Length: 290
Ligand code: UTP
Image (cartoon, rainbow, N blue to C red; front, side, top):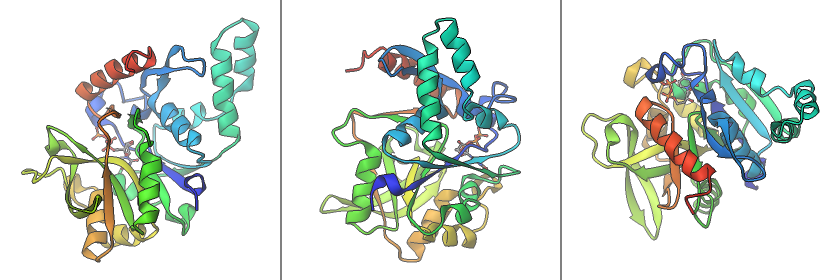
């Protein structure tokens, strides 16, 4: 099995309350950051556009978006509009080419929209995709985080390689952070360069490690059984982290890789993170981070 055969689940149905009032009518995942066009020029794209492009460039062609009330903009954005491309072309606008390329990617892909009527948690958003995901391993990628990678091996490719090599049930992406309380964290043991996850905790009051879980995962279908078993956790929401802990409790092998130091995580969850994402993406977009 190759990475390109995996389906990607993109939960984008959260309320984005930490980014209010900007996110009252505008989905958080559609907030713009800086990027490069295909020609390497600086441009501005919604973060979700970048996540889609990155997964597409890994060969992924099946995308399952979890959307809810107020997220129609996402569906509209991912619906090719060639008359608009024509209009841009006719008036000599350079953006026509970029948009055209994006629409071709969409046409080469299958996009499935799953409705989460109420934001009952990240874990719940994943759980409701069970039928469309089917029995194969799959990727979960949050719609508000984007990794710029300068490493030798791209994070998702490395995750998939390790996932297969170590016959894992799930693989997590970890990053050392200074403020672990606002994340899910992982306790790990290292054995022959293998990082085995022993315990995960969502937003701990007293974090036992500074290893934050990035919202990018590869799972087998067993995560669905685990999510079906657990009860709502932090914030009264069904937490994906608790589902992962349930896998561990069942004796399943959960492993991790650490995000290499050359990669940058852009997160637009709260205003400070958004400001950092704007700055870092601008530096990257201008090609000034090499
Ligand atoms: P977050 O917890 O960061 O997003 O979820 P949120 O709940 O929208 O943010 P706040 O806390 O209110 O500010 C990570 C990703 O999971 C999606 C979000 O849209 C985001 O992309 N999500 C979250 C869902 O799809 N459904 C949910 O019930 C919760």
